[in-house]
Picture 1 (cartoon, one colour):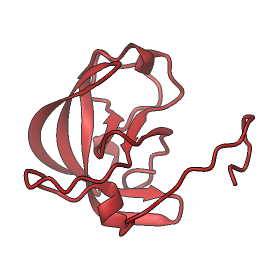
Picture 2: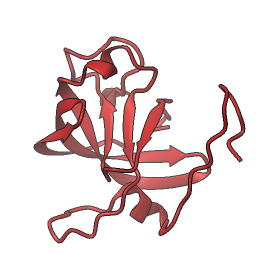
Picture 3: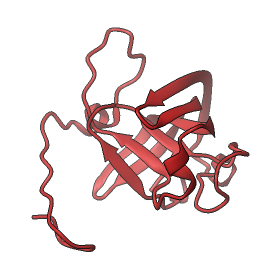
Picture 4: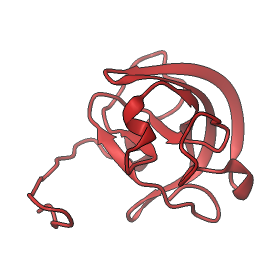
Amino acid sequence: QIGTPGQTLSGIFDTGSFDLLVLSEKCSSCPADAKYDPERSSSYEEEGTVQRHCYGSGCADTVIGFEKVDVGPLREHRQAFWEIIHHQIAVMDFARFQAIVGVGHSNSPSMKYPTMLQSYGIDEFAFCLEKGDGAPGW
C-alpha cells in the first residue's frame, strides 16, 4: 500500500533496478484503473525532480516524491518514489500491476535518497517460485 489512507497497488519485483515507480493519476496516457492518486493522501510530499527511467521494454517519464509505503509487514513513513507521468512501456497498458518495485541495491554516490530495500534495512533477500496462481512461494 502507498499513502495515507493506504492505496492498494500491485507491483512487479525487478531485480535489475532499485527505484519504486508507480502509475499516477498525473499520467494521462496511462490506463484509467488502479492508479496512485497523491491528492487522496495526507502523507504525500512533492519533491519535483523529473527523470526518465528506461527498461528493456521501454521508457517512463517520472517525477519524484515521498510517501508512506507498506509492503507486507514492512513500513517506511517517507519513502522516495517515482510517479509515472508518461510512459512508452506497452506491457503496462494491459498488465495486472501498477508499480515497478526495484529490489536491487544501489550504492551509487549519485543516489540522493535511500532505496526501498535500504529504507527497510534489508541487505539480503531471496525469491522462492512455485507453479500456479496463488501458490505460497515457499
